[in-house]
Image (spheres, rainbow, N blue to C red):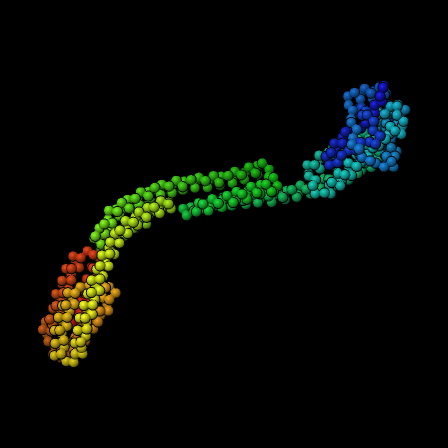
Length: 484
């Protein structure tokens, strides 16, 4: 052979080191890779020929591992558990027996043991590093399971030279610690999972509660915003908490999605109904505007006022046609109404001027009536009565006064009549004449005036004028009740 080959242990220790988060070391004196030891490892005393090892080398070989420095004392302590046969076969003490772990033909015996001792130290370092990792917080249950399985395989029959009993004892301690750590992590994970599941469920229940509360008075914009916030809460929870298993996640998402779909469907139906109602309201208001525009030039103040009141009542019942549409429609309706009410107000202003003139005339008549007082005897009362009757005739012919002055001025004239009548009543009580004989000219005049007022009230259509006539009638009826 032009170049000697070295049979080194397989790469199981390197795999375990990778799972434990470490990098295996390369022997300080490593030579080109040699074939792996065959599965049927020779028993103690059985020495395979160099040709047999060379034949196996063609089928399996390993590369040197990454470099880690070990002290010479550690290497020598590991080498104490191995020996090298005359043909270069390397053996390790394994319990009460020994087994072949490789071959290094042509090398000095102390040099042949070194690569296997280094691999032992690397495997031991891998165990120690994983033991340290178990004390940290970043290790995962699955990693523990995989690493323990790999390390158990690595320490079963490792192709190394060193204290295998101590190595396996260390692994046993690590296995106990690893299983305890895994149980602890799985418990914590279950608690975290249950917490996340409860939180996600609560979010779903919020969405379902929102949908359950939908009704005729729902504010769809605000409720939609509220449901969107719940969806954003779902997304945040999904990104920041433990991942749920597919079955739980799918079931919760189905409920949440169903709630959102129900909301969208109900809002769509509401929107369609709202659009139909708005169209109906717009049509109704267009008709009201048309009728208002036909009435705006009417001079029948009383009747047309009632019709505009009816139109307003219909407008309120018509519903909403949308903010922009309602504003435009209302402007058109208000414009037609303003034409009518503006003309009516102008007429009233003109009428009020006449009423103020009437008030001045009645104020003058009132002064004449009040000048008849005091009345001291029946004779004076009769004379005062005749003069008062003439004043009342003129009073009735004058017409209406401003509404705010009606009660004041009518009450003042009524007071004059009462004082005169008080003297007349005293005489009538003393003489006790027949009822018909006691009827004065004033009483007959009142009855005639009341009859005439009844006719005027029946014929009048203007509400204001009609109310004024009824007020005048009430006053005269009061006078009549006093006279009788």
